[in-house]
Length: 272
Image 1: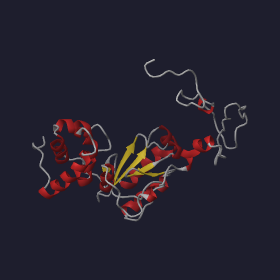
Image 2: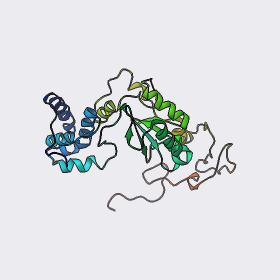
Image 3: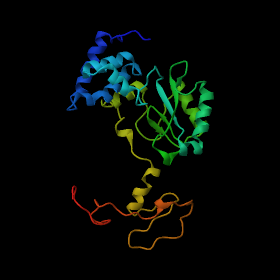
Image 4: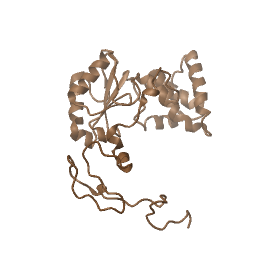
């Protein structure tokens, strides 16, 4: 059993974290709402949420350590043990898995000599499987400190971790330039990314994510797919070159009652 209570931060560290915590708490009408960003703040100090970090959050928010622990153990974005400078997450959910995510994860485990949620001996890379990176249109996807590396293969993923281990510069497919896990945690706590050019380089959604928007605007698609005819026009029966199987989502859908230009049916005010 761990010795209770948990040790406190050194005085200078606690003073610095307390000043940052006050800025975070001031954003919310209820201080308890600041718990999630404060857990990120403590993670930016040690690279994981330690017992000391849990004690700190509990004391500044007036909570019990049990209440803080319940939250810290619920979300997988909070680490409960020391981890590497680079958290490499391989999506092994259905689409990424069948597109090669399982093979990437297996190859990285062998290549790095670690298992799931384990860290290389030099403390640089922690490997884990992720249920979904929310980027299915770029499957298979690997994330490093929550930045996207799209359309990966076992070979490209191994080259990626080799660059991380060798401290060579690594550029995400999209998003901000890569930083360490502690630096990422501070950004997630709500503090600005002060690296020169980092904010301007964040970019946006990749081309595969924007196909629907381009079709809505009447722009020509950049890759194969079935185009649904606008309302009032006959549908195009012939599939576009490169198109594959169709689904019910290919048919025009009724709009919600909140769209005044294309009402789906009678709408009532709330409570009627």
